[in-house]
Image (cartoon, rainbow, N blue to C red; front, top):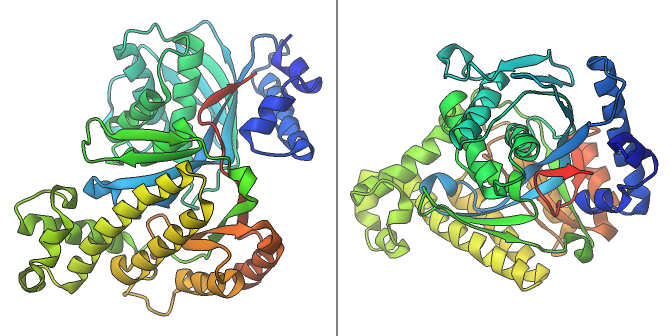
Length: 426
């Protein structure tokens, strides 16, 4: 039975329910989305034979703990969410990969021409080329396919749609031509390689790893070549909370210096001790040399270094709390992490525009609405954009309504933690 018939007969019901962490009523819109995707494939590629079409999915991700700790080779806690990119895919017996995504022109990749091209840096084409090239280096006989993709991963929300795309392409190739021999960890590393080498962006591994592995993922970056990765299969549905991402708006255009200053100041403290990154130091090194560091690096750099050690440690503690099914302790740690970001890391607003403090305002509203019943913190890089909150279900309507009253309709996204990463839906 082909995938369209399976979807029409609800044969994928239990898998869809599991993947999207939804109830029986919630399965229907996800199923309808996939049926529409298969029909769209038939229209775009003028192929009414749905036999052989396969569906793959990769989720967006959220950073839960470890704010600006990854670039100093510290610890983070991330998670896959129930927003994803899905693809209807069919091998095309050629050396050409064809991908049509919602709102974009079709891209075509010739598998005989996978060399790096500086002029293609920053393009989706370069990502696909890099991923395909890596699989070929592993010795696989990669062939072409046709794909139609659709995404509900929110752009600009810090949920990392680019990593989801990379993981999706890797999952497709792994499923079509590699007998699923490559692990979720390896697929994440392949995505990072494509983004670093072909796309030209020196990103870390957190985004790809959270999307590929799914659920909560604890990562220790101390050994950058072989980071320690642990999936934590926590039953998020059982704690009766929603994960909310609130988009406060704000202008990201002039924030590059703010982001760069965090890395530069943390590294300046490490350099004081002759080291490259803060993870090569101990926290005591900072406290025993504060006077000299104030003269050499400045107070804010010291505070950001203090945040690094505190938040890296909290990411580990958060993971342990989840492993122990202690969600109340987990929430307290999230709150503490958020305070550290606000007071020590200082990335809730830009000092170049102090009149715009949407993140601070959103966090103040969180405190008013949730009191001690939820948890909240800045989400992602900071300075503008989004905050994250774990909201008890009994307060969800109030939280959603008050946030949208403040920041606009459609600005509070109600999400859940997805238990799996990149996957084929069958």
